[in-house]
Image (cartoon, rainbow, N blue to C red; front, side):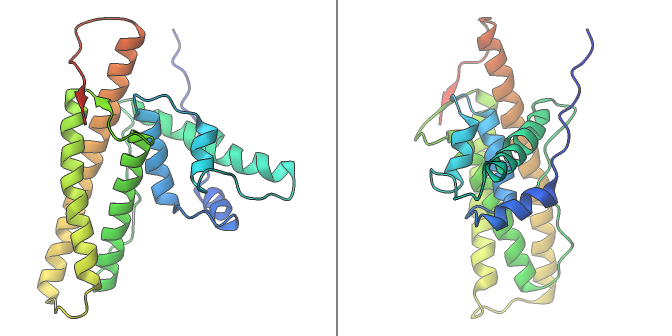
Length: 216
């Protein structure tokens, strides 16, 4: 049987322009991870409602139906569908890439970006629920992501505190730690996505023997 072709890559610049045009309160990098969490979650989701939730539950005002179709097409047909490819081990998800920084402000911005990406993924995964049932590996990976999220929040706050001096060597070392943690975030996010995908497919096939889900 021939393999299904990969969904085409989303036009990032186009989507960013649309989010800016309609004053979306959620930044693009967080939209990506929220959608990925929605794709992975064991909870039923409605992509159109997920898009509405980016604006607090209702779509922004449009000048025409063409404008409506352009936004929904970009977010669902392009971005959402392109992210479904990461349900395969051979095509892992990657966080937003940034240029190498060196200043205190750049460190704070990078840590904030990573924290927002983590927040988006967890929000998408829980999809409005306080607790969800996750497979064992996914649950363990989510614990790790929670710990890293706290680290990123701490680094972001520290970088904004002008009252505390930071040596150049310490700054370089912290940048190194953030880059290392970025790789761990990617690894653990992919564990969650793959484990949830595997469990969901097994449940759909009504095949027993998979690890019982763990409440989180």
